[in-house]
Amino acid sequence: GDLCVEEASAASAGAGGGATSSSSGSRAADVEAFASQVALPMETLGVRTVRAAAPGSLMCFYPGRIFPGSERNLPMSNMLFSNEYEGVSMDGAGWYPKRLQGQAVGANLPKTTLWHGNRLAVGNLCNHPPKGKFPNVVPMAFRWPTWQELGQDTPAHWARLVPHVVMRGGQLVRTASGERDVPDDLKEKVWFPPWPHMGMALISIRPVQPGEELFWNYRLHPRSDQAVAMRYPDWYTPVDDDELERAIAEHMAGR
Image (cartoon, rainbow, N blue to C red; front, side):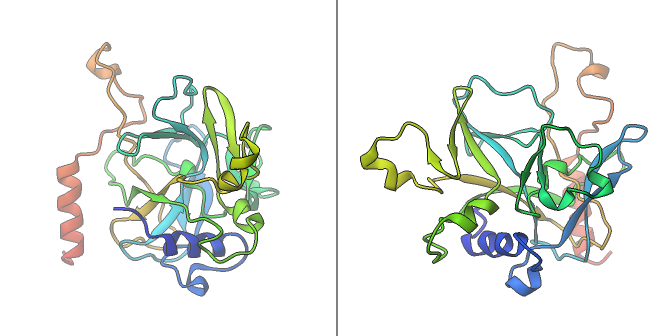
């Protein structure tokens, strides 16, 4: 099911500044990027919780460029997420929250970094669980609400919090300023945000403790043209969904 409009908007409203999820009334968690050890000896960023979160909490959003399902010019990116059910792909490569500017954890980010204003939009930094661990979050599609639905007078504030642009045919066609090449009589209808505009959130599936890293199942498709040992990257271990379901049931039962 879709993440409710109220939850997404409340979480993002708090994510634009210093407000926490408790003050905004949302069940969103407080998270931070950090230097994860999941890929050692390689260096990689990860996302961890600042405080405990209950099952069903909105942990973070996945930012980046949005591509329609018909797009033939998908980027060769290690942060390309495809939602087959919604018919879209998202590329989060190079998208980072402004709060990382000047922090040690963001010192080695690429020069082409695109800074956005939503501190909860760090889903592109969440790692796949290493061997012996299970995911603690799952992706869920939702529709970003419009600034009119939020009762705001202009789209200015909300535009800074929605961490997306839309691509079509290899070209950027939709930004916070509206949509390109739109006739004058239609401009009012596509003024930002020109929805429907899909987003993706990561939701906790069990209690998450303070300082715990967030993992979600990348569900990489094996390469059938390769030998079995070469079908996946070295760092990737497929998640057994049946074992995950049993582990969650036992955890929730208090065992």
